[in-house]
Every structure is written in C-alpha cells, then in structure tokens.
Image (tube, rainbow, N blue to C red; front, side, top):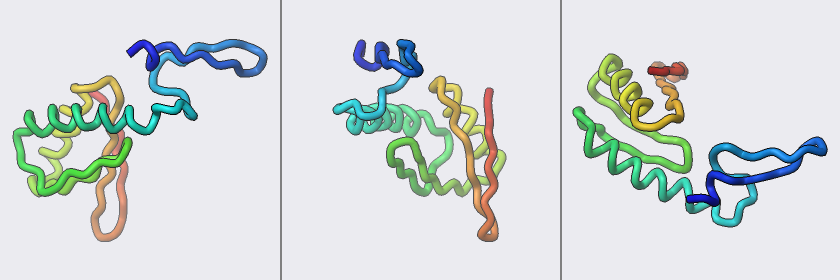
Length: 105
C-alpha cells in the first residue's frame, strides 16, 4: 500500500518522510493493525510446533499462555522475530514479578 510507505510531515521547519508505519491521526489507522495482525496471527498459529493454551492480541500487544516451559518459549519468540522485521519482546511473570527480555535473531 503506497499510503503506508509515503507519509510526509514537517518538523522544525524541515520536511521529513516517514519510512514505515502509519502517521498518528491518519483516519484509516485503527483498521490497519487489525488487518495486519489477523494475517500474521494465522501465519503464526499455522506454523506453531507447540500448542498454546491461549492467544489474544490487541493492536501491538499479544497475551499468550505457554505451558511448554521457558526454553521452547524463547524459540517461539525467535521464530516470531524471524517472520517479521519488527522485534517482539517477551515479558514473563513469576510469583507476581514481571521480567522483560528483548530478543533479536
């Protein structure tokens, strides 16, 4: 879609081109992440080698219950990062404490 790859704006008396994503305030913005995530979700779940107990997403947040253990979860996140140029991060919870991991291939 050309409209998603050629957004121009001015800042500090200069014109800039937004190289990716959609400009905030763009009237069609709310539907674009939903369409992307629906396609991406189908691709992820069809390729998953382990069963997830649940998978929910809202915009750029994904909630997953992963019963197979931390080692296979890290492989799953690496697989997600291999499917798209954006980096997926991981936040886990144990004993009411959250831990964040940033993973890249």
